[in-house]
Image 1 (cartoon, rainbow, N blue to C red):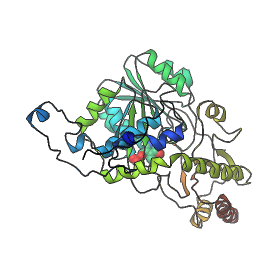
Image 2 (image 1 turned 60 degrees about the vertical axis):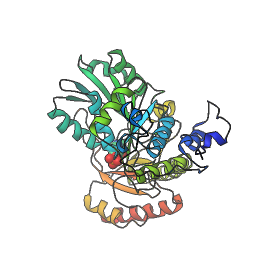
Image 3 (image 1 turned 30 degrees about the vertical axis):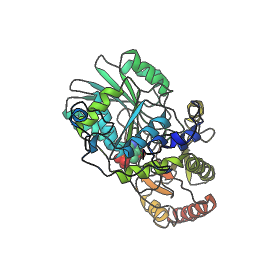
Image 4 (image 1 turned 120 degrees about the horizontal axis):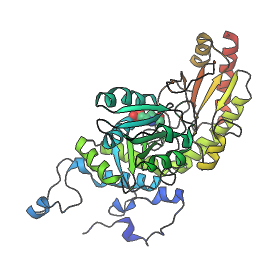
Length: 397
Ligand SMILES: *Cc1c(COP(=O)(O)O)cnc(C)c1O
């Protein structure tokens, strides 16, 4: 019996669907036998029907590393989420960033990277890419169309990350992408904060959008994955480079990411609602100097966020007035609901202290910085936890 696919058992979908509907319906054609979810294919060898199929690669699937219905379902769904042409899945967000940069840069090329990029992305540029003869210039994330002045004849990739890691600067991605295109360079973005749901990178001129799917797409802190979505122009070069590097992710993790993606819209909506309540409360606290959450009115980046984003995720930062590490430790070590740990995008609330790293601009705030991820707990409980934390901070200052 031929497998029954979901699309065969339903009427064709309309071309135009709202984002939440697309998350639920995307890539369902990879399901078989009427199941709502795809099978988890564990595969290396894929058998060919005959010599002609093998010689001329006449099958959709030819080898585990080149894709299975499980990987194609996730890739197709994330490409649909971001509004790009096609997608590859890497074993982590950082692996996705590395693959995307290596696919478009070679010795003698120049890369522009925001001063607020995710620290491991900076390390990649400063070590491995530098060793390959690829030069990186860091730029002010708020430079906008002024980026043109930094573009050189050998600039091949202009990289964005918006909002900026930890300090949340919202970039004028459309202006930066336009400046990149004016010289034939590629505009690439780390779109992890918006999960590709609240910022449509391709509609804002990007050619390549990378995400740590580890964060909101997986959404439950139990798998690490990265996605690279390209437009049609960049896809062949990227696909070839990615396959040449031999990258592939495990099927169980890819399944978890697809499962997470189906509920992305409702999870993000709640993360935003809770984060807004907590961030507004923080803004009213004596111990807080600044709240860096672009979704709040009057917060840095709010106008640009309002122009370009349709929502905000649960990640934001705070600059405290306190400068004492001892007082900070008293606050953080006693927290009961906010865990201390890296990564974010899961269901639980997290907090980490950080020190901004800058080489092209300067960070002038003197107080200690905290990055919060507001999870799906009731914000009343989260506020009570923080309130007790601020009491410990005040007592220890
Ligand atoms: C976490 C993160 C990454 C890296 O993702 P991993 O899956 O941890 O490798 C990249 N960019 C941003 C903005 C991140 O927050």
